[in-house]
Amino acid sequence: MISFQNVNKRYPDGYIALKNIVFTIEAGEMVLVTGHSGAGKSTLLRLIAAIERPTFGKVIVSGQDISKLKQGAIPFLRRNIGLVFQDHKILFDRNVFDNVMLPLEIRGVDVKVAVRRVRAALDKVGLLKKEKAHPITLSGGERQRLCIARAVVHRPSILIADEPTGNLDVGYAKDIMDMFKSFHHVGVTVLIATHDATLLEDKQQYRILALDHGELLV
Image (tube, rainbow, N blue to C red; front, top):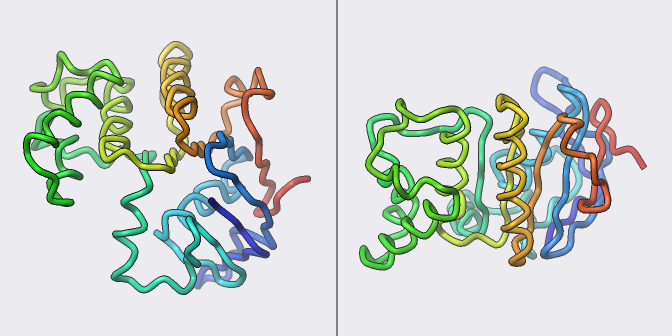
């Protein structure tokens, strides 16, 4: 499903974010990418989503080499990937329903089908009763739930989240993690970048990729 083969990422200013990264993630796995701030967690996730390209090495996602992927093919790759960003990227001029509907509109999904999918996604994250609310009225935890609903509404096979519990209290963080576990239980491949040690209490539930200054610890 996802394979990193001697992947390096060097930025134009000379900063090396990742060094000789090698791993494989099978379909249906749940993986936590851990490490200190600046360890390379976000860079690793961005490479999987083809937001960035590796400087050296190969990143293979669903059989496609990200380094060789043409720009026009990236939207098709991302149809199988759900993304939950640190900064939410919520549209504050649209209500909850319309925020989640947007990815389906872009894909040209039939309106009746799209409406059902949006309401199913909102129900899954506990926001169905707030579908007409505007994001400005939501709490931090509710905004994160909104982002998750938008990420999964197109039923991706891979779900990627970058520090999804970073600004939440313990109760909300647990709820968010429980949601990711529920997607994992139905066969979605889940990758979560986090430095939150409280998420690692039951390490047997997850596979862990630990980064330290751009290197993968064995």
